[in-house]
Length: 320
Image (cartoon, rainbow, N blue to C red; front, side, top):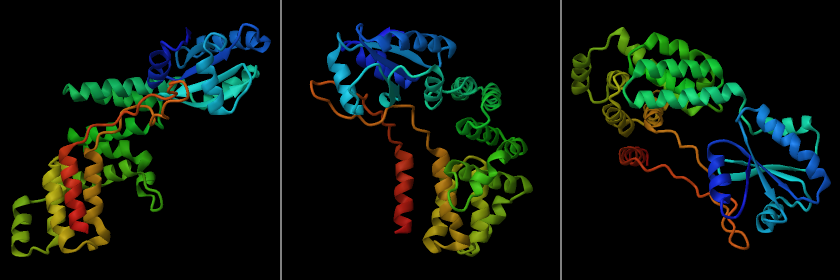
């Protein structure tokens, strides 16, 4: 638990909420309900074992912060609790409500123990993968899914890492629980749909594709799209993404609609796989409130990838 002031508002509240949810309890010494709510919140912070941080703000000593938050939520009384997630205020409640209702409120914003463990394993796995230790990374991704089977990032990273290390059968087994999401014709999951096409390419390559024969067939007939797409799958399976996209562009420029726009869909899938997920960050800043207080941290923007930008432009030019 920490006391919030104008001096530490950004670091201890906004920045801290990028790492874990922070519940801000706005209270005053003269407020009777505040005195009953405070101990409940402190006990819950301990019960939740660090899954959220409790911060306190004395509205008498910090009227500027209390006023701006009250105006933002349309609240005129205390105790007033505001949940900060990702660098911004996202929800709140007013009054000394029962502990059961507070737990219901926390459940909307605070990860359960399994989710938190999965996020830790996932982060460690990604670091291990960056360091070149694929086996240790795979173990972490598997542990993340065991802790939280619904963790989409962990499943994506696990299947991706298995494909990158040539373990196609294991990748298929790991992918099966989300295969329906990838195949949904109305709202397909973009990243899982991309994995589905990568898996198909890897399985096709395993069945045996002769690069020389395919290149000879293409040389004899530029519109032999079946041969060209098979060559794409060889490149895709081997992680030669730019080579695969160049061949796909040849199909798109000659026949955009070929095989249900399969070339365009595969091109987009490769871009999806090459795109790093957005880092955890705050939403765009709300701007400075009256008195200069900013209620949300600055947005974090992932740096542009020149290669991805180049191939997005190539696709746009081929399509339009």
